[in-house]
Amino acid sequence: MERANLEARARALIEAEAEVFRARRPRCAAAHDEAASGFFDGVPQHWMLDWPTPFPMVVDQASGVELVDLDGNRVVDVCLGDTGAMFGHGPAPVLEALKNAGTRGLTTMLPSSDAQAVGRLLVERFGLPRWQLGATASDANRFAIRIARAVTGRAKLLVFDGCYHGAVDDTLVDLVDGKTISRRNLLGQVRDLGELTVSIPFNDEAALEKALAAHDIACVLAEPVMTNCGMIPPAPGFHDALRRLTRAAGTLLLIDETHTISTGLGGYTKVHGLDPDLIVMGKPIGGGVPVSVWGMSQAISDRLHVIRREQSGHGHSGIGTTLSGSALQLACLRACLEHVMTEEAYRIMQSRADRIEAGFKAAIAAAGLDWTVSRVGARLEVVFSPVPVRNAEEARAAASDTIEAALHLSMLNLGYLLTPFHNMVLVSPALSEKQADGLVEAFATVIGRLAERRAAA
Image (cartoon, rainbow, N blue to C red; front, side, top):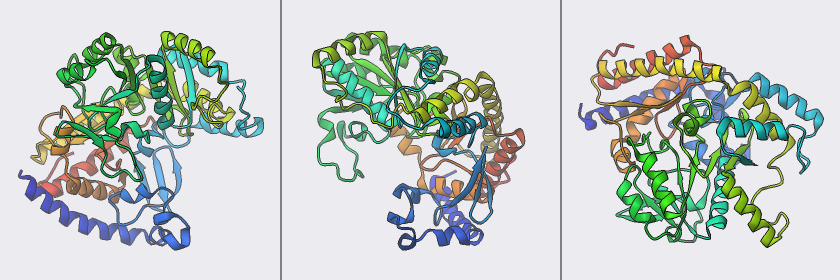
């Protein structure tokens, strides 16, 4: 089906579905008032306006995979805070840890009694022998990059075109006509980020080898599967080449598992046997509480000890914040690692994801659309392309903001919340088979409308 025809139908669908959304949410509409709320743009974070809705849905309650808004509308959540609530909103062990932490102290700038257990769990679960905590994955990536620069004595960073690693200035770049430039929509950025950051296409082994040849790259920062520019899986052998070439160039490999932790127990790194020098995880690692972790190899740990002794700078390293490593974070990390992020949880997630993947593919075929469903464990992405995309250029060419908005808004009106900015579905262990089947049925209904065909679930 021609893209132009599909987008024309999508525009009409957006208009109709926006009216349905407005009619059902008068209280949410009233709550979105900049002057009354005191917030810039009327929301706690300005990007909350980027959802494809006339105004934000205001959440009153969230539990498991169900959201209830101010108007009493109930929605099944397969966005899950863009992974922050991957194991469901308010897992019982984490809520218990929060309750107990409140009586034992929240932050002291000292290790709590949970620290040793958490350290052992991180080593056991994710493999690397030395760990530190942050508040967000953005923090953890920033700290890990600093360590890579300190250990290697190099300044430059390499990332892949289309990447997103949180609010880390060095990574907010685009590859345009072969040149790395600051991302166009950055606010207040006053320096050329391309001076110290190199961006190349994902899955391009030749470009990687060329970029590393000067031996001036401190580290390569990569998601094992790119998840923020559509879903871009690694080509066969690419991770082997990435590890081999970085080692040959004296460049460290930093793997960001913040999204690909959906792969399975231990994340993509553990499941697929990657061997990074540094690793970062955030979002769901504490069951929804703001905490992140970053780990390092023994070799980096040893070198860091030497550097710290030479500099004798106490804690003034620029790495860490006073609320990182708090008693609250450690309590929630322990609860999540011991009782929430379990083999059984991942087994349920994979089973439900199998069900959804098969249903989505059947619905797409019935609607006569040339779309693909990509997947990394419990994370699925609908890509408007007949084959999996290999890099950001292909992902951008396949994307359509119009079709995406129509899909998201229509699905929301049918009771299912997708992740904004791309077509991602994340499966929580709290999602029932009935809810998974309902999601597939809603998806089939919407794309049937778009394609003007009857799509079977």
